[in-house]
Amino acid sequence: MRDVVLLGATGSVGSNTLAVIREHPDEFRVAGLVAGRGGKRLAALALEFPAAALALSREADADAFAALLAGSGRSGRFYPGPDGALDLLAGTRADICVAAIGGTAGLEPTFAAAAAGTRLLLANKEALVSAGRLFLAAAAAGGTEVLPIDSEHCAIWQCLEGRGPAEAARLILTASGGPFRDWPAAALAEAGPEDAIRHPVWSMGPKISVDSATLANKALEVIEAHHLFNLPFDAIKVLVHPQAAVHGLVEFIDGTLIACLGVSDMRQPISRMLFTPRRRGNGLPRLDLAALGRLDFAEPDGGCFPLLAAGIAAGRRGDRAAAFFNAANEAAVELFLARLLSFPGIAQTTLAAMRESGEGYFSRLEEVRETHARARRLVRELAASAPRPSARPEP
Ligand code: MG
Image 1 (cartoon, protein in one colour):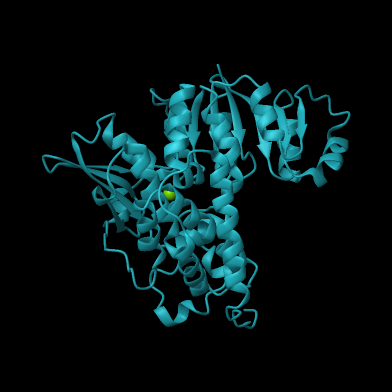
Image 2 (cartoon, helix red, strand yellow):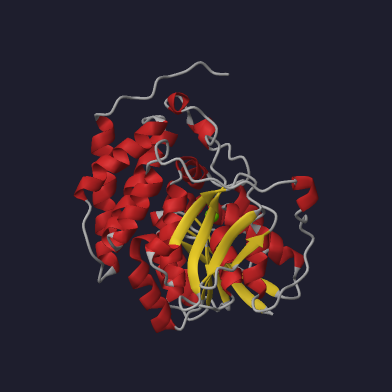
């Protein structure tokens, strides 16, 4: 029996992890649940797993949430407030921690989990993108095994089977191309949040869906792959693959390509990593290649989606530039979701902000936070003087 702590219990990755765990009560026990806000979903989980410790970072929700659970007979501890996640990690025994708090908000708890010496299933991108060297050093010092559950990295991890840069010549990450793959460039100016979060293949949270639409997500994944698999940026390639059946490929030094295929369902990579080194059967749908008929691959369109190249360029310049890119893009996406920035405005504002990004690497987590804050502030200033998106009639 392995104890699992979930950072980001109510998000998309958290919900999928719990779906896998529910199928195997003989293998896993939910030891801790961490969430940002105390909504109905967390309340339902709190009652379903009464022995699990709970952390809730939004202070405003804490009292109402505690009242909601009073008299429920829960035995798990409750850790309210901004440090709740860190307190829960310090006070809860775990064998596996799933780091799935998205965005820069997940940075600190993900670092704390890296220091804990448990197996870490990593979904949060920011720890590797913004502070790759610091994060891997923290994990190495803590004796923590980092296993990626992002579908592309999990695929490459499976293709590599432990082989490193001596044998792997090139990694290929696939991108579905997002909802705007076939949109004419002129129409992108009118694209609203409701268009961008309608992802053709994956069902995910709004931030990562918008990042998939701009291809910024793929830039972040290239940076992650660089750190996780210790290969230079020149050896990591992105291909658009609309069927999203091939999640990743490795080209070995003898020219052999090994690909990892499967249905587009997060439960697949999560299950693979939860059970590692074993595999366990599951009730997931199977990929039907004959029904699919064909697999298409194409070079990404750098003209319509400039954040892909810009993000990779930031990664090449080191963690400081990557962190700046990451936070600038995050702030721009938030403004787009609030309809304060147009879709092309996400890239324009992020690229304009990159003029003030730094070079080199961080030596302390505090510096990462400062860089994030600086990038976010600059994007908000730039966006305030950018043209607002045109309102369009409701469909
Ligand atoms: Mg991915």
